[in-house]
Amino acid sequence: MTISDNGCGIPDEDKPRLFEPYFSTKKSGTGLGLAIVSTIISDHNGYIRVRDNEPRGTRFHRRTPGHWRNQERVISQRLARGSMHSILIIDDEQSIRDSLTGILQDEGFNPMTAANGEEALGRMRDERPDLILLDIWMPGMDGLETLTRIRDFYPEQLVIMMSGHGTIETAVRATKLGAHDFIEKPLSLEKLLLSIQNALKLNRLVEEKPRTEGPDCQRV
Image (cartoon, rainbow, N blue to C red; front, top):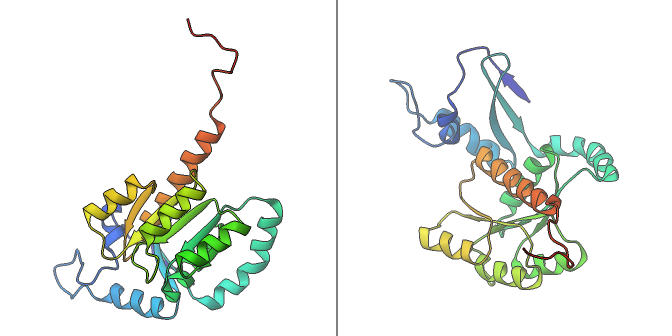
């Protein structure tokens, strides 16, 4: 469901905080309205996002699991054309896996899921994803250990870390272990999609980089 207006719009710097409790640019009000809406939709394994409305105004787009079933035919067609990037979501929370699955499907990706590191490594033996979204705090094998194992077996694998209790030290450690990016929970849809796009774009540039030296080239 999409709701749009033709008002003055929402500044880009306010969009990442739009659904935060008590955030408001108005002089009156509690700043809880959109936060409550977002929580209710999330509790039903859905999501809500905000975009600019052309030529002016704002557009809110809400999706719940009932809408995702309608995407199956489109997804199958895109997969047949080989036009979808696969993304493996590794998170022990079912609600997060379901929400991210819907978001990524809507954005044209082919999501896969795993509830823990062991399950993820097993899935990767059968199918290598283009990118991984990996939660840090999981029972058993945590995200950092999972990242280490993934990089041991697949050194070029793109991995974006997610955490609701992250620290600078944790982010630095994840980066040193080979993570492409580190995103804090609750996830900002805009930041998440931007990080995914940047990672895939960088990987594509690396793959397309022409070789300037071959084995027979001589340095002068």
